Length: 126
Image (cartoon, rainbow, N blue to C red; front, top):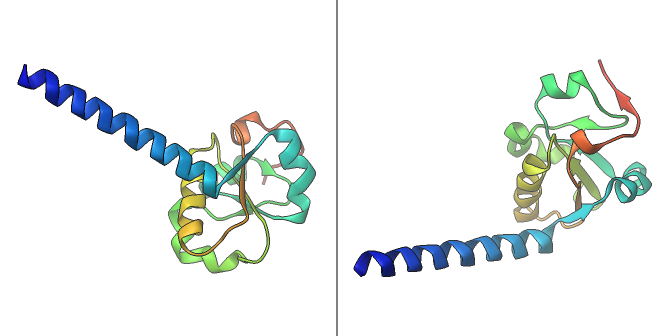
Protein backbone atom coordinates (compact mmCIF):
# COMPACT_ATOMS: atom_id res chain seq x y z
CA UNK A 1 0.00 0.00 0.00
CA UNK A 2 2.84 2.41 0.84
CA UNK A 3 4.47 1.70 -2.52
CA UNK A 4 1.22 2.67 -4.26
CA UNK A 5 1.11 6.03 -2.45
CA UNK A 6 4.74 6.70 -3.33
CA UNK A 7 4.05 5.85 -6.97
CA UNK A 8 0.98 8.14 -7.03
CA UNK A 9 2.92 11.01 -5.44
CA UNK A 10 5.83 10.56 -7.86
CA UNK A 11 3.48 10.46 -10.85
CA UNK A 12 1.65 13.57 -9.65
CA UNK A 13 4.91 15.43 -9.08
CA UNK A 14 6.10 14.51 -12.58
CA UNK A 15 2.84 15.72 -14.15
CA UNK A 16 2.97 19.01 -12.23
CA UNK A 17 6.62 19.54 -13.19
CA UNK A 18 5.84 18.84 -16.86
CA UNK A 19 2.92 21.28 -16.93
CA UNK A 20 4.88 24.05 -15.16
CA UNK A 21 7.82 23.60 -17.56
CA UNK A 22 5.51 23.71 -20.57
CA UNK A 23 3.76 26.87 -19.33
CA UNK A 24 7.10 28.56 -18.57
CA UNK A 25 8.40 27.76 -22.04
CA UNK A 26 5.26 29.13 -23.69
CA UNK A 27 5.71 32.35 -21.72
CA UNK A 28 9.32 32.99 -22.79
CA UNK A 29 9.39 31.54 -26.30
CA UNK A 30 7.11 31.94 -29.30
CA UNK A 31 6.91 28.85 -31.47
CA UNK A 32 6.48 29.83 -35.11
CA UNK A 33 5.26 27.78 -38.05
CA UNK A 34 7.55 27.72 -41.07
CA UNK A 35 5.39 30.35 -42.77
CA UNK A 36 5.48 32.69 -39.74
CA UNK A 37 9.22 32.12 -39.33
CA UNK A 38 9.86 32.83 -43.02
CA UNK A 39 7.86 36.07 -42.96
CA UNK A 40 9.80 37.53 -40.02
CA UNK A 41 13.31 36.11 -39.91
CA UNK A 42 14.88 38.74 -42.19
CA UNK A 43 13.98 41.45 -39.64
CA UNK A 44 15.40 39.44 -36.74
CA UNK A 45 18.72 38.00 -35.65
CA UNK A 46 18.70 34.49 -37.09
CA UNK A 47 20.65 32.07 -34.89
CA UNK A 48 21.37 28.43 -35.73
CA UNK A 49 21.92 26.62 -32.40
CA UNK A 50 23.35 23.47 -33.97
CA UNK A 51 26.99 22.41 -33.89
CA UNK A 52 29.36 23.72 -36.63
CA UNK A 53 29.43 20.44 -38.58
CA UNK A 54 25.61 20.47 -38.78
CA UNK A 55 25.63 24.15 -39.80
CA UNK A 56 28.24 23.50 -42.51
CA UNK A 57 26.15 20.66 -43.95
CA UNK A 58 23.28 23.11 -44.54
CA UNK A 59 21.63 26.08 -42.86
CA UNK A 60 18.97 28.71 -43.45
CA UNK A 61 20.30 31.48 -45.66
CA UNK A 62 21.42 34.41 -43.48
CA UNK A 63 21.79 32.44 -40.24
CA UNK A 64 24.68 32.84 -37.81
CA UNK A 65 25.98 29.73 -36.08
CA UNK A 66 26.06 30.06 -32.30
CA UNK A 67 25.79 26.50 -30.98
CA UNK A 68 23.99 25.86 -27.72
CA UNK A 69 27.29 24.50 -26.39
CA UNK A 70 28.88 27.96 -26.94
CA UNK A 71 25.89 30.15 -26.08
CA UNK A 72 27.23 31.26 -22.69
CA UNK A 73 30.55 32.42 -24.20
CA UNK A 74 29.07 34.01 -27.32
CA UNK A 75 25.74 35.49 -26.18
CA UNK A 76 27.18 39.03 -26.44
CA UNK A 77 27.08 38.55 -30.23
CA UNK A 78 23.28 38.68 -29.95
CA UNK A 79 21.64 42.05 -29.36
CA UNK A 80 19.01 41.96 -26.59
CA UNK A 81 17.08 44.89 -28.12
CA UNK A 82 16.22 43.10 -31.39
CA UNK A 83 14.07 40.03 -32.06
CA UNK A 84 15.92 36.72 -31.96
CA UNK A 85 14.84 33.81 -34.16
CA UNK A 86 16.40 30.53 -33.11
CA UNK A 87 16.43 27.12 -34.70
CA UNK A 88 18.20 23.79 -34.35
CA UNK A 89 17.62 20.38 -35.91
CA UNK A 90 14.35 19.56 -34.13
CA UNK A 91 13.55 22.37 -31.65
CA UNK A 92 15.09 21.03 -28.43
CA UNK A 93 18.38 22.96 -28.45
CA UNK A 94 16.72 26.17 -29.60
CA UNK A 95 14.27 25.87 -26.68
CA UNK A 96 17.15 25.45 -24.24
CA UNK A 97 19.02 28.37 -25.83
CA UNK A 98 15.90 30.53 -25.45
CA UNK A 99 15.59 29.62 -21.76
CA UNK A 100 19.23 30.60 -21.22
CA UNK A 101 18.88 33.89 -23.13
CA UNK A 102 15.67 34.74 -21.27
CA UNK A 103 17.47 34.35 -17.93
CA UNK A 104 20.09 36.79 -19.27
CA UNK A 105 17.50 39.46 -20.13
CA UNK A 106 16.54 38.71 -23.73
CA UNK A 107 12.79 38.96 -24.29
CA UNK A 108 11.75 38.79 -27.97
CA UNK A 109 12.57 35.10 -28.58
CA UNK A 110 11.04 32.83 -31.22
CA UNK A 111 11.94 29.47 -32.68
CA UNK A 112 11.05 27.35 -35.68
CA UNK A 113 8.46 24.66 -34.97
CA UNK A 114 9.97 21.29 -35.84
CA UNK A 115 13.41 22.79 -36.42
CA UNK A 116 15.61 22.74 -39.50
CA UNK A 117 14.42 19.28 -40.52
CA UNK A 118 10.97 20.82 -41.22
CA UNK A 119 12.40 23.80 -43.16
CA UNK A 120 11.65 23.82 -46.90
CA UNK A 121 13.01 27.29 -47.71
CA UNK A 122 16.39 28.35 -49.07
CA UNK A 123 19.37 26.52 -47.63
CA UNK A 124 23.07 27.28 -47.91
CA UNK A 125 25.83 24.71 -47.44
CA UNK A 126 29.56 25.32 -47.09
